[in-house]
Image (cartoon, rainbow over all chains, first blue to last red; front, side, top):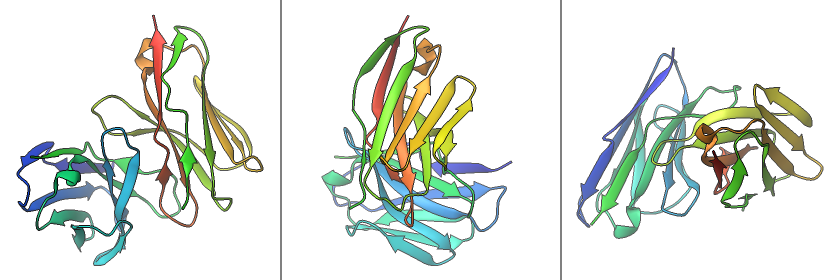
Length: 112
Length: 109
């Protein structure tokens, strides 16, 4: 069966520090991968999605970036965090032609 | 800008009653519609999908779709306290899933 792993579960980082969040999927090949952010009192906002290795589409231009170095690995990064980067970061995967996305357990990031 | 609108709630229903959750969307080319349940502090969990007009039933859940009115709904029959959560409506067309902000449901025992 397919599983998605996301870590760390919680993170407290100072303003201006770098960020790296990792997501891996098991049990499937060539998935579509997504990074969403859920800020307090706001809905799920799509940040990046990828349909293949090295293919990244950005929905929200900001100080975040994403990379897909392997088929089932998706990484979210920042060189310098802002206070406004705080939120609940969710990785998700889907199979082309099949409905719905499956989410990882999320990373709660607090920038202080 | 593709939008998905939901009443934020809270929607309070007594245990055993029917909970009705509604959602409207702006993009007419949307093809796939989903309902997610999100417990406080947890990630969203897919509970229903619907692709064509009409009703789709799965256990205590019924999803309803009306593409002409750009309207999706979720009915939860025999509501239980464990159904208390935020319910997110999500819509997919030519772009990845767009989510509404969710409706908070509270089932009172």
